[in-house]
Structures are given as C-alpha cells and as structure tokens.
Amino acid sequence: MKITPRLPDHMSRPGGFSASIGDAIMFTPATQKDIDRYDRAVDSAIATCGGDLRGALKALIIANEYLEEELRQVLDDVSAHAVIAMPRRDVA
Image (cartoon, rainbow, N blue to C red):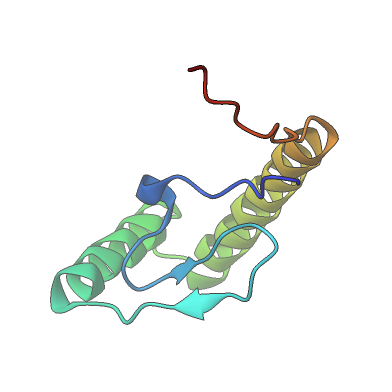
C-alpha cells in the first residue's frame, strides 16, 4: 500500500486551491479578509514596479513560473522517495 503525500494545512489557503497530491483540485471561496489582502498585494506589486502595470504583471508571471518549477521539483522528490506503508503488527 502506497501512502499519498498531502499538502501541509498551511498550504491550503482560503480563496485558493487545496487538495492532496494526485487528487482532484477543489476551490475554497475567498473571504473579504482575503480579498483585502489581495488588493494590498496588488497595490504593493504595482508600487514596486513604479506604477507600471505591465511590469508588475510580468514580474508576477516570472515569480509564479519560478514557484511552479520549485514545486514541481519538490513533488518529484517526494514521488521519488514515496513511503511504503508496512502492515502494523500488534505486539501482545
């Protein structure tokens, strides 16, 4: 029996996708608190790029591609080192 690794709880955020690895992806609706946080993050990204919307969008796409590649490498490592569950033996 192979144990399917699960994403840690802190990686399953409201307003985002959450699922165990290899399962169907489920969407959790964002709360107003999440939306406000997203708005602040957007404002910060635009300000960081000197008000250049295209530059902010390009920077976020590049950052996302980097994170996707990093996640792919982690998932590959997890898959390569998958744990095989052994039947439990009760000692009497």
